[in-house]
Every structure is written in structure tokens, then in C-alpha cells.
Length: 309
Image (spheres, rainbow, N blue to C red):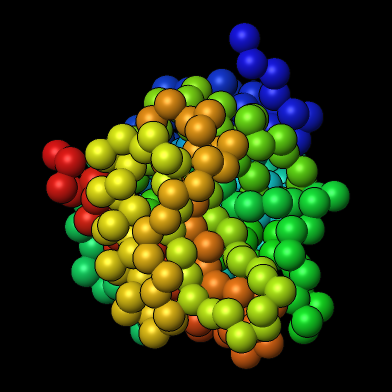
């Protein structure tokens, strides 16, 4: 029996609450949950106001769609809202009342303004895949990771990029689980156990690198020294896709990081670039560049999964 860190427990419990909700039905408009009550709405009320349909409910997020739009709402107090692949920022306070998730009513105008917009840096063609992917934003909470000369923390970069990757994979029909979706600390073994608990088809831990040599640049994809053929194939697919972002390619390498060693299924660790390099740190903090990185990682993951079917 593995022990969960305190930060993981809430969303694991949410997973039990929402179990079996993969085919959502219309929710009754209870009087005590009417729009405007304490400034909150249920996910179904939100969808109704926006002309969308709730198509998927997961422990970590909701997906709403119409013929031209996809909205993904991560159900954490600081989880992001994505409309057609573009982040609108944090969702705000999320509360559970009578086993219903209540969201800020202020989301309605925020999302409405973005409906019908295109996401230029994100893939437009959507192919549906199946499977479970666990995305692990490196560091978090009391562990900031590397600190760039620009002042940005690795934990911030990894969470921002991971959310974008998760949104893209969700668009492709995959079940996506985040080991963290806020600035919280989670033990390394617990991160791997999330992948084991969900029997993930792939575990991808996302990091940013640092070196004494401030001229070092480029991304690296790691697997453990005894990695399976599947893990090595996934790393190769991600490496090939990431070559398109224009960063230096440092290749696929071996390292026995704990999150790789303790994960039962295929696992990779991605170093996005070097925060110790001033120019690369600026790029890694840029939202548009993060979009490109996320699109490449998501492409590599779906290429891997498609080849495994």
C-alpha cells in the first residue's frame, strides 16, 4: 500500500466522486444552485449559458464542446481554463456542494469572448486517440527547482507547459491525469505511483535544465537505464517532434531518475531547455514558445500511442 502526499489526496477523492461519469447527462437546475447564488455556477449551467455540451468529466478537468469550440476547465482552485488551446488563466475558486462542482459565474463572459477563435500555434486537425497519460510537472511547492537568472522558477515553467500539454492531449480524446495542477510539493515516489495507480500508457515528467556553463542550451529526453522498448520508442517520438521547435537537440539519454525507476509502465523525463542560459530562460517563459513546446510534446506522445495500437 503506497501512501499519498497530502496534496494528492483531494483530487484522488474527486476521482472516486466522479467515477462512472464518462457519459454526462443533463443536470437538474436546482433552485439553491441557480446562477448568481454566491456568484457560482455548476458545470452544466456554465455549458448551457455558453451553448456548449459537457462531453467529458474527469477527476482533474471538464471538457465542453460545440461544433467549433473546445473548452477544458481544470477543476483546481488555480487550475487553468483553455478555449481552443489558449489559456485564459486560472479558473478561480472551485467548491464542492452536494457533490456538485461549483465554478465562478465570472467564467461565462471570459469564455464567451473567446468562443469561435482559432489557436494559431496549436494543431487544428483533431485525431481521436484512446489511453491514459500521466503528466508530471516537475518540482512544486517548497521545491522550486532551478532558478533562472531572470528570476523565474523551474516549477512555474513546468506547470505552465504541462497544463498546455494536458489540454492538447485531452482534445485528442486521451484520459489525462496531472500529478499536480497547482504549486504544491509531491514526493517523487508518489508521482510515479500516480502512473501506477492509473495503469498509465505513458508517464511524462516535465522539467527545465540548469548547468554551470551558462552557454548550454537545448532539450533532452531521458529514459531509465533499464527502460523498456516502449519507453525508448516514446522518447524517440517526443524527441523527433520537439526538433520542430527550433531548440538544440541533446538527444535521448539514460538516467535513473526516481520517477522513471519507480514507474511500472513506459516513462520519460523531458528537459525543456536550460534556465541557466539567459536567452533560453526568456524563451521558456514566453507563452507562445510554451505553446510550441507543448504542441510538440503532445504530438510526440500521440505519435507513440498511435504506433502502439
